[in-house]
Image (cartoon, rainbow, N blue to C red; front, side, top):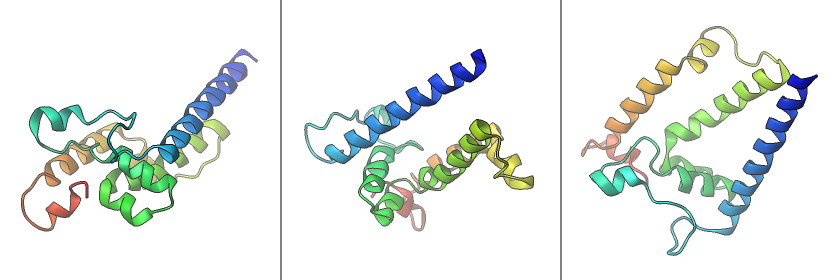
Length: 136
């Protein structure tokens, strides 16, 4: 019973935070001056794009229904959102949405770390087709 209460409290808190995030992304444009979103500290320090660069702008585009713009900002994060949703449903509801090799990759932290590192390197390469991975 305590575990159920804890899980329900966690789900309620996560839902409230997600709704607040959606409202902020709907209300404020991350590209506009004076927005409440933090800039990428890695980009400010190095001049390079990190694997998460463009994430806020990607989410802003998604909230506004612009999937093409979202993909131009951070295609790895956009591709990872359905996987994250399936993992969340697997864990919260006990449904098996991910099976076999897909589940092994989805739950493999090493895979995601390597993917993020490779994506971070690739999006900083100064020639096509990799320049298309930079937040646009």
